[in-house]
Structure formats: C-alpha cells, structure tokens
Image 1 (spheres, rainbow, N blue to C red):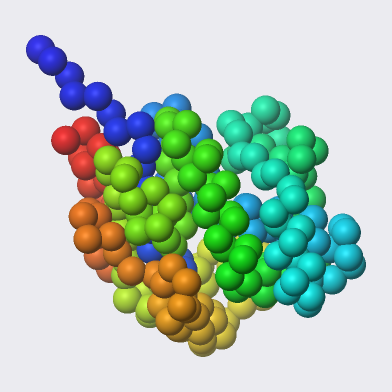
Image 2 (cartoon, one colour):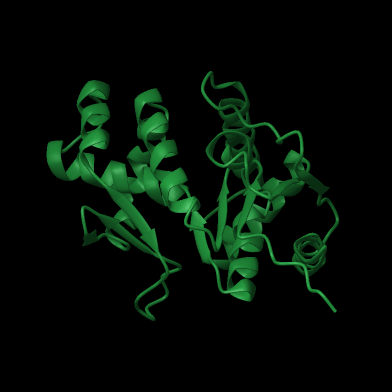
Length: 228
C-alpha cells in the first residue's frame, strides 16, 4: 500500500489565544518537526535592539539593526524546557528573549514595517528547509504561501479570552476575565487592520472554528488533515 508523504511544511495561523501555539507544538512533537512560533524572532530583534541601544523607540535604528543580524531557530539542543533554540548571530538567546524588558517592548518592534519585511525573509529561509510547523498570523498568506498544508484556527473573542484567562490563573498570575477580554479585542484590532500583512485566512487554508472544542478534539482534527 502506498502511503502519502506527510507535508514537509505546515503553517498554522489565527488570532490571539486561538490555540495555534498549543496545537502547533503538539503536532511538531508528533511529527518530529521543528516547532517554530515566529513570535520568537520579534523577541530576538527586541533583545538585540535593547542590548545595542538600550531602547527600541528609534524606528530607523532598529530597522537598520534587523538587516545586519542573522536570527536562526533550530530544534532544542538542551532539555531545559525550551521549545526551540533561538540564536542571534550564533549566540544562544533562547531564555534572554523571555525577560520582562523584552515583553514590554516587543509589540512596538513588531509594528515596524522594515522589521516585519526582513523577518518575513528570514522566516522563509528557515521554513523552506522543511520538516517545520510554523505558527503565526501571516504565515500561510505571506511567509510561506506555497506550504502544502495551511491551517487557520479561530474562535469567538469571548472564548479566546476565557482560554487566556484560565492559562494565566493556572500559572498563578493575577488576572481578570474583563481585562484579558479587552486585551484580546485590542490585539485583534491591530492584527486585522495593519497595512502590512493583516491577519486573514489564506484562500486555501483549512479553517476550524474551535468554540466548544477541547484541545484534544482540535488536535485530532488537525492530525486528520495532515494524514489526508
């Protein structure tokens, strides 16, 4: 019996708290693929800018910097909880990009058009190696539109806010549903209305509305698409 080959490049897009990161990681682990959440690249640029300039407010400086550095994302080399290795010019910054200062500045850096353009180029370089599950907001439409399997996960804003709220409570964070709902709505507005690479499903993406679905149900459906 001839077995169909698994798609070498799988993209998963969707809005904030749609479950794409959880499903992407589960799928990558199952397939033995690189799990690549493209958000780590924006964090890496933010870390590099803070390291070089102490701030990220100068768009021209940050835009010049991103063209001078090489960011790489590889399978995890250490069993310390990391989901991948993140390298800036060969230096492992996997944990450095998770510090609170990066958290506070990454949104501003990711809004710079020159940063988005350059990181799209670098994301393509990594994605085209194959054996990758790439997760983001414009992967199937802009970064890797040629991917053989493109998935778009979505849910109502209320459902997504409930999920994010439960995650934060489970981590021991102080949180409120109302605050999380407001933040998710704000992120949706930014993602859907930006001039460069707005959040929209690819025309040939497999679309799944996940309201009322448990994580395992979503994962089984995605796995069906992989095996089709």
